[in-house]
Amino acid sequence: MPRIEEFDRELVLQNAMNVFWEKGYNGTSMQDLVMATGLNRSSIYNSFGSKLKLYQDTLVHYQKETGGMFQKALVKAKNPLEAIRLIFEGFLPEIISDQKSKGCFSMNCKAEMGNQDQDIRQWLLNSQNQTLELFQNLIKDGQEQGIINKNQDYENHAYQVFNSFQGFRMTGILVKDRKILKAIIDQTINTLT
Amino acid sequence: MPRIEEFDRELVLQNAMNVFWEKGYNGTSMQDLVMATGLNRSSIYNSFGSKLKLYQDTLVHYQKETGGMFQKALVKAKNPLEAIRLIFEGFLPEIISDQKSKGCFSMNCKAEMGNQDQDIRQWLLNSQNQTLELFQNLIKDGQEQGIINKNQDYENHAYQVFNSFQGFRMTGILVKDRKILKAIIDQTINTLT
DNA sequence: TATATATTGAAACATTCGTTTCAAAAAATA
DNA sequence: TATTTTTTGAAACGAATGTTTCAATATATA
Image 1 (cartoon, chains in turn brown, green, purple, blue):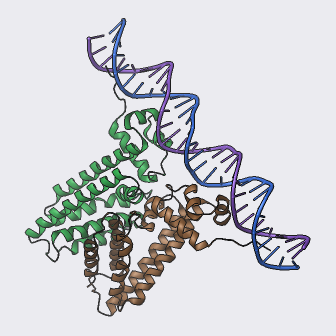
Image 2 (image 1 turned 135 degrees about the horizontal axis):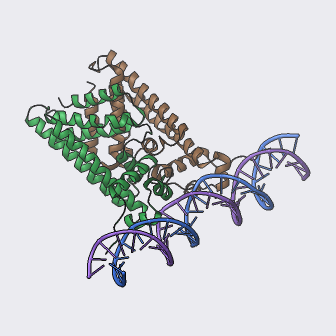
Image 3 (image 1 turned 45 degrees about the horizontal axis):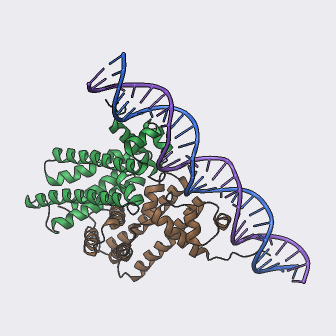
């Protein structure tokens, strides 16, 4: 009996995400979202509840996207060390071609909303733990294979890589020079070998 | 002849900065600023021009503050390597005691406003260059003194330290464990020795 | 085809936004 | 003390904010 939703939910989330990404949560108006998604105001509220809920949905959408990039790197890599390198390098095209200087959606979210909304804060913590665990597992494997040094235990190594990765995303906002970015990746990998 | 300004300009900037820092530019309303500074609306406009100009003034105020912290580290340090360590460690108290999870004002600004206002973008670039030059000079000195390795030229080393520093400020938003933060600093210093 | 259900479009909601206005108040100079 | 200059307080500005409303529209089932 029900009339079915006409729009492509993932496409709407993609478009909404891009606006939030560029302007931030508070910098984005409902009117911006109406124009970017092509949906009517009432359709947005009917399907997503509120501006904040829609924002949270775009965060999950983003997580899926980046999760896919991580998986690609894991599949392509021949060993754990190369996997970490490929994860970093996977963001190079996005960083360099980012004409609008949107930066990283996740970092932007953390800076703007990490201390404003409890649900978002929890999402950020979960996302952080997921990334840390991924690095931890890779480094543990690498250490067992003798590819990665044991100067530090795998937890500390993982935090260091995580730290460097976050710096990488922030640096990439104003630094677009591939050579410099590559050097930063090299140095991060170097601390593991 | 003129009636003199009654308020302490630096104190007003300090209070305004704290609001912007916690809520972001777009998350802060003029009413927030009136309450935080104790000034009347018209006084704010009369003395600072607009919300955006006031924000820009708080950025400069912040730069003075952090510049002071950097100088303290330089004075206290016995060598360039220790200087870099002290710079990082100088932010530890702020990070750990940051109950509101405000993070780093400069990182927040970069994430939210770096692509929204040309003047702010330019300020961020200047600020970045200043920090990079500081690190470059320290590392060049350290290399000449034989304290810092020559695995990389001083420019690349500086970018790596800068990158790690930005990661440090972002990581510190959700990670408050002193041991972990110390380990991140240690690893950053390690790449230089 | 008739019915039930959900989505859609346009308008309106109260509230808040950043900013302006202007008369009253205050202080330094003459 | 009189004058000049600036700040201050309170109110008001139009525009924009996020959200709600509700009749009209569209569709899958019976």
